[in-house]
Amino acid sequence: MTLSLTAPLVLVGAGNMGGALLRGWMSRGLDPAQVVALDPAPPEPMRALFAAHGITCHAMAPKLAAPAQVILLAVKPQIMDQVVPGIVALAGPDTVVLSVAAGRTIASLAGHFPPGTAIVRSIPNTPASVGRGITAAMGNVAVTLAQRALCDQLLSAVGEVVWVDEERLIDAATAVSGSGPAYVFLMAECLAEAGRAAGLPPAMAAQLARATVAGAGELLHQSELPAATLRQNVTSPKGTTAAALDVLMANPGGLQALMTKAVVAAEQRARELAV
Image (tube, rainbow, N blue to C red):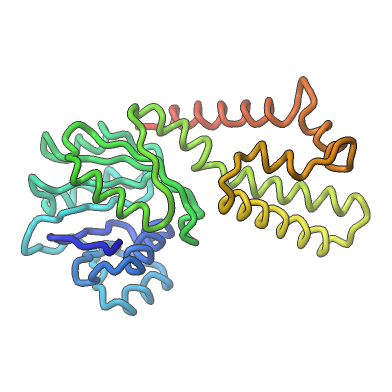
């Protein structure tokens, strides 16, 4: 579906996530002339991306011919309160503010904008950089159906999108999908180290582990079968996989219990960091 806007899209922050989104929008046919970029010091890859599409990156908010249709906040959470006051003037009564900053609540963002401003809080994950991310999102009561649909289009340019009905579930999503890639990378690390301990050359163990994790992920992505069924399909009764799974699924202390504990810890930390 081609992305088309009726007013400017202001991209605030030209870091990794801002860049991933911009590349996704360009691949969906968004007119570069509709993009206004703001970042006082964009990294070299982003400067090249802007140049390739003829997008000017401003150090400070420019004057717009019309209020922004979307303001995308992609700056680090700790500098949000310093950055947002400088771009409030770009918003109008029909603007939707879309945040991809971790830990910044809708209420904290709303405090910077006029009452009644439509705000969507979202949490994409790092696979967005290769178009395979997933984002959890929620809007405040001011977000219209059309604005929600537009935000869904913008976020889905880098992967799947799910919408939650309670803001507290953003913290749970952060613990599962936001932090989740690190859990998978750790599994690849551990699998490689286990292969090395079993006698494989380190480079070969790393290659086997990396390709296995990536391939299993792609199979899970393409298959309509539940993960449990795919697991069972690999597992022959009393075979090698079954022997390994007996360890990973042992009670107490199996992988499920450990993963649940990890997600709970991440969710609690997300709530502690939220402002």
